[in-house]
Length: 115
Image (cartoon, rainbow, N blue to C red; front, side, top):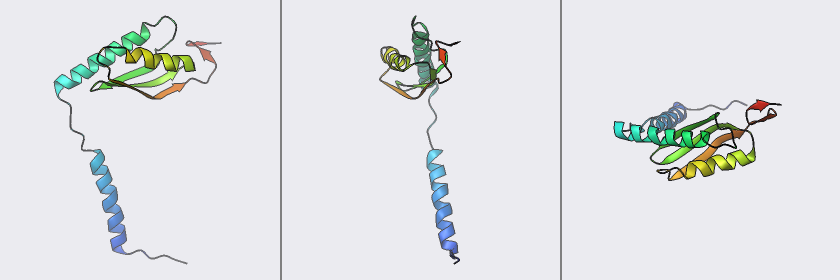
């Protein structure tokens, strides 16, 4: 059984796709001052993470936008995942910490050293 679709159906589908693409591409660019503030905050969080004597956070990338810090990358234990969030949350200027892109390393490493 063949289903015939009209030209209107195809045009509607194409229009919906183009609208979604357009909606995603309309983010306003940041002012240079905001970009500098966000970069400085991300650097402070990165330095705080890497100053921790117990956990290895060299594989964690930090991005900031308006006081919201996003942590991405790899850690080697659930404790490190929790601690990264705690450390980042205590840096002055951080309003919220998003760690949804942090992952546990699953190749048998401990603090960056292969066993």
